[in-house]
Length: 212
Image (cartoon, rainbow, N blue to C red; front, top):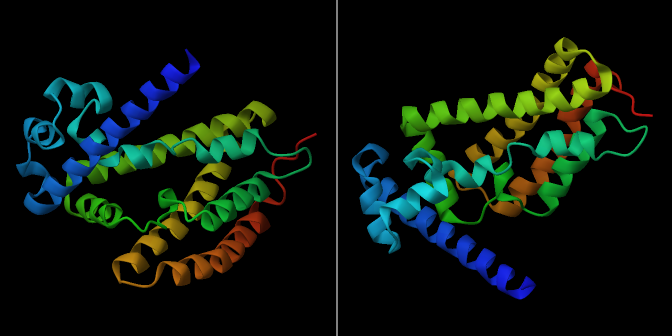
């Protein structure tokens, strides 16, 4: 039974990947607004209903790999060690993602990831979706912080600073990737920049919140 469930999960992942690849290729070639869900389904060799079942909307097809990471920061805070600050937890998580060349922070060798960034910059509906993604990331992190402190207002302030720091680093990675800089050079510079950025945030938050 476990092997069967594992096979189903792999097939589902492969189908989702095929749909995403077809959508990115078509939309990059013709423009997001000029490609229908039916055309994406045909290119991926699935039904239109399958596309909707997997992703919900056409926008969801394009940005789903990014949205899977909406709770990364909140998870880092919840799973941090006793005595560790939120800044330290997010710094450690981000450095681990750099070491792993994680596409979710803009360190992708897949050319389609670059196409996605270009599509977002060119398509208002996708850009709006990314704003919603950012706001959701902030709220999830604020919820995690407020669970410990009981102060949602300060939690939102801290979450905004922490997510803002992460996003600034990610945007720089995307910018340099689009400029054609080598991935290894970007990753090396990002690690150094992350130390500076999180140091700056920590000066403002001063160890907030302490965890017993």
